[in-house]
Length: 176
Image 1: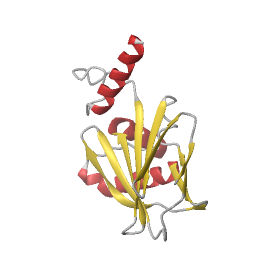
Image 2: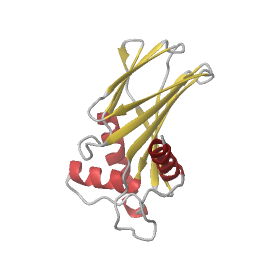
Image 3: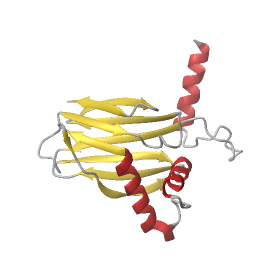
Image 4: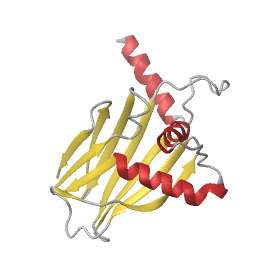
């Protein structure tokens, strides 16, 4: 029981502290967690599904570099246009959605770096009504980390549902 509590506290403090290194003084130490968080919120006023993905910057840059065979520096303003293209293409390939059994297209809104993470933003426009079912295929960072964990939170009409996918699981479904 004590070990379980210790692991939970370690996970919580590492994930929510804003720093994900085991020893913040040693930047070469790899963090023990490979986590992404995807938030989906149905906006009834605008009739669209707003999507944001939070991914640790170092993991994301490594994966983008490997996938696209180029050096990636998310922070470099000079590379903004190319980074937009890479982030857009990567997320659209690794996050696919069906609303009420109909495949939808994600529209890239942009991305921003916040501390040790990158937030990327997408939306699904013109959803006539609030979805009753959302099916997700999420393989974010799966090609890089076999311990990858993808958390997803979906809110429709104030009803929030969450799930976690651990590599190699990639599909989740939300009913509203």
